[in-house]
Length: 289
Image (cartoon, rainbow, N blue to C red; front, side, top):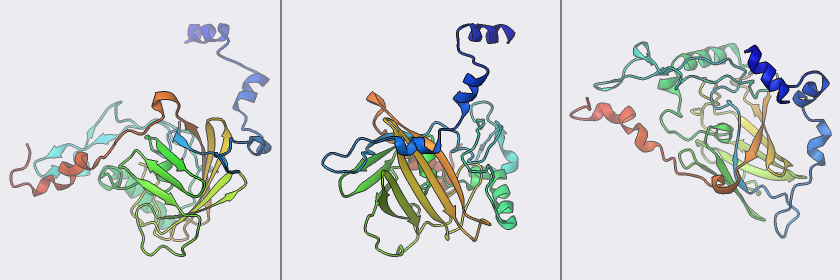
C-alpha cells in the first residue's frame, strides 16, 4: 500500500494541503446561479433535453451507509422461501457504501415510521416494490441505477425512465388535486428563472425511496428543483413533506449527469417478465423445480 501511495503521489494523482481541500469543498452558493444554460430553440427557457443519470448509491440507500452484505431469495417449489431461508449472494449482491443524499444525513422519521422502516429493511426482498417491477414513484425514479430522458418542448416536458418504461408528463396548468392516487403521482411544473420546479402529489403509499426500506405515506408532497449547473450537469433537489411519516419536511440533493455519444439513449427494461415466476409461480399446476 505504501508503494502504491508513493507511485500515485509521484504521478500527481494524490494531493495534500490546500489544493486537496479545495478539491473537496462544495461549490459556492452563487456558482450555480452564475451558469447560463443554452436556450431551448426559439424560447428563453433553458434546454434540459437529454439522457440523464446519477453517479451515486442513493438507489440502494439515500442515507449515509457503509457497504453491507445482501441476501438472495432461494426459490422453493411454490415460490420464494421465507426470509429465514435466504442465502448470501456474496460480492455480486453487496450494497455499495455511500455518503448519502439526505441533507443533514438522517431522515426525520416519527418513532412509528422508523420502526416500519427497520422492518422493511430486514425483509426488503419480500417488500421492496422494485423487486416486483412496480413503478418507482418520485423521487426514487430519478436516482435509480438506470438512466432517464427529459423530452422538452416550448410548452411541455415529459420524463421517460428506462426502468419499467415509467413516464411522467409535467403539467404547466394546475388542474387541481389529483383525481386518484397513482404510482407516479401528478406533477405540476413552473419555471423560476432557469430552475424547473415540480410539485408532485397524489402518489400512493406503496413506493419506497430506496432499497433500504425508507418509505412514506399517501400524504407525501414532493417539490423538485431541476437546475442546470454546467454544459452536461444538473442539480436535483427534492423537498419531502409528509406529516404522517416525518416530524418535519426534509430535503435530498444530488448531481445529475448527461450521457453523451452512443450512450445518449434509453434501452428497454420492461421487467414484468422477470418477476412473473417470483410473484405467480405458486399458481402453476405443476411448479417449476
